[in-house]
Length: 246
Image (cartoon, rainbow, N blue to C red; front, side, top):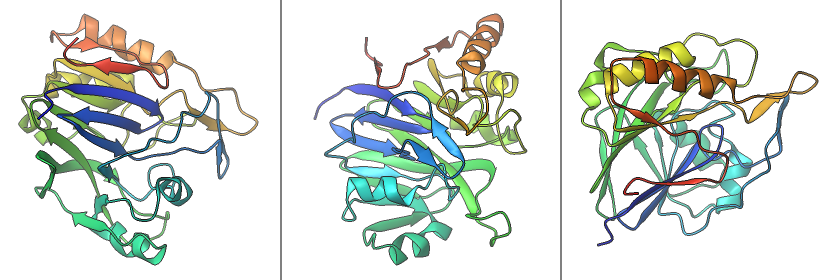
């Protein structure tokens, strides 16, 4: 088995993780425009030979049906239980539904569904639906948060080699169930990862508004550096690859 661990940020909440020869892709959003949002950085190439796609919740910027279609309707999707019927209606037959605490084996890598403090409904007035995050466990342990606010059980996810942590969103303000730079820095204190990668910022903005910026990631990095942990923050550009063994 390959004992390697690499993380690439594809923009917004999309992470490509290569762990022990297994390729996992979270919340792929691979379009220049989605609803009233437009993408500022260039689109990365569509990832290929993905072992499984991890979906954290049903919001349009995390469960994007056209992006999933680019990966192929035969692609294995791991998703919160409420998302299963939606995905199957759109022709995705290979869906594994999870709730907090479930563990899925992907060619020897354990994909563990963990809590997320976030409203996971597809539409604002849709039926209640649970959001999840994931801890990926092989020769390394990596946390992919998706969208979440702070919650009391975060420290239980330790130990972590790396954590992909949202630090903003796509608009000028954040609603409940999100992390801004200050809350994300507090999440680092609770999680205590060796490396933190800020995500969910600087990619999509509202049409007609100011372009998204790197400011949330830079503010997050400063706060973590000034805090009580020894965590190293790595700010990736879209498409950059971080080798956790490097």
